[in-house]
Length: 234
Image 1: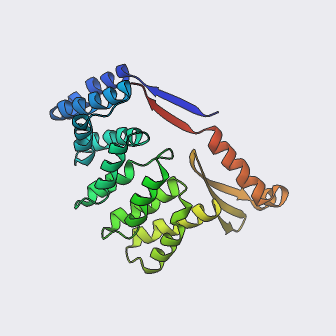
Image 2: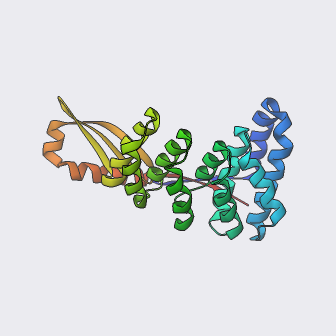
């Protein structure tokens, strides 16, 4: 069964008290400013320029505790607000590789498709191998089949071992929905779906009995049914 997790103000306050204030107290003010800006935009339905600036500053920052949260907030706001979409697009063209990576982290399955393609496709050939690797992972995570031709071209010329391995993993998952590697006793199967990725061994007898297509369909259905979504309440 799909699980919807709701994050309330009280949950954030507990996290601030028990984690942020103890480990990174100097970041509490910046975190609260960005969090309050996000809540205000969610509550009013309007995204003020000054609030967007606070959230964007946190998303562009080098401190993980800030950008890991703020990129999620930007992703939510970019579903409805053109100014948030423009900020994500600008981040994708920033001079700093970490900011370009953060832009990819602002994309989700509900993001506007034009925004997703405008950010992911150029990132596949970025000068930074870290950005290229994140772009390939993001294309797979979001099921961006439009990226397949670019990913296949990049795989032929990719020199970075980690980026090449990511492309080798994501391309067949994106193209076929699964990877099946034969073993002595059956296959090692990897399947992707909305709920993530599932991998495991399937015996040769099971493959003969059910057929690979049926097994893949069952695994995809399980991923869908066990998907977790997180909703941050205004």
